[in-house]
Image 1 (cartoon, rainbow, N blue to C red):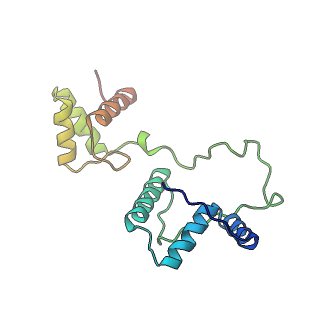
Image 2 (tube, rainbow, N blue to C red):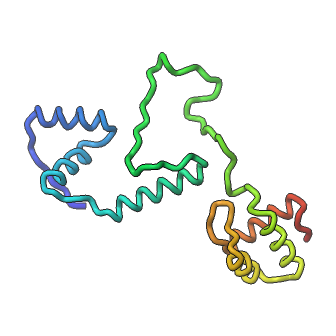
Length: 163
């Protein structure tokens, strides 16, 4: 990315610092947004759509409720007096739901995998049958050989699949 150095009066730099601190952004972000607004340039929609898509995927994986609007949501940091003392460190990961990758997919999909495995079908054949039947992995993706191989290990460990 090209760089540009500019000299600004102290009062503008102070305003930049205040705005950046208030919005948890950098001076560069604030300056770029101001220049875009002044020049009438709208950020590329593909970048905004991509960010929204990534946020949706992360929320889906985390099991968080979907946002209804595309507006960014800021999280406020509570005062120290409002925070309660806990026995776990504050930076310890908080898991509210179990990881979807390790959840059962569908009992019918499990039955199909077990049946085709017992018939000695190849991984490609089983993947094709699962995707053709519309079954998806626990994370909502299409089946691949790698995912099927991992999932068959899970079925073996749980006792649903022998061999």
